[in-house]
Length: 242
Ligand code: CA
Image (cartoon, rainbow, N blue to C red; front, top):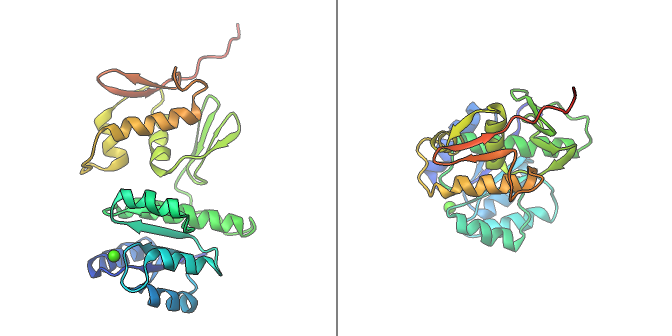
């Protein structure tokens, strides 16, 4: 898949313009539909590789567009919501989207998710698909391994599932093993310098990662809290050999 095609379903002109420019620059072909009915018609003409679907649309809602597409296609769909509360609602409805993103979001985050979905779709289509573009690498610390090309984390060989932010956070910690990373730096690097939100978000994400990679999440040995400062990924204990 050299130039993946995105069907951008979005009714707000400002978003359409910004996304078209941004996604073109990232190597995507962008086809636009500004309401749900047009989206369904365009879907058949364009045969997109991925659909970016706004929830709030005139005529037919994003939820109904998603359900309709799912009747005949397994194309990756990212649903765009205006509030994170809507994500819970849409996820609850099980409309069949593959991922969710809340406005306002950063184009970099969107592109990372688009690429992750396209890679997954390519792998599911039979393994022989084109290799993913490589700008990532593998990190291995003790029995935790993170492959940023494949977006895969394993613990003692067992894959664990990490959503994007948890993945980025773990990536940052593993890249700086043995070093204390201040809270501000972690928030800045993972959520962006202009992030406005509860800084508890960081702790919640750390907690989720711990629940997946720590042998005993109540007694973290890998990601440790440095009180008043931030977090540190501990170097693995040296093997007991004399
Ligand atoms: Ca809208």
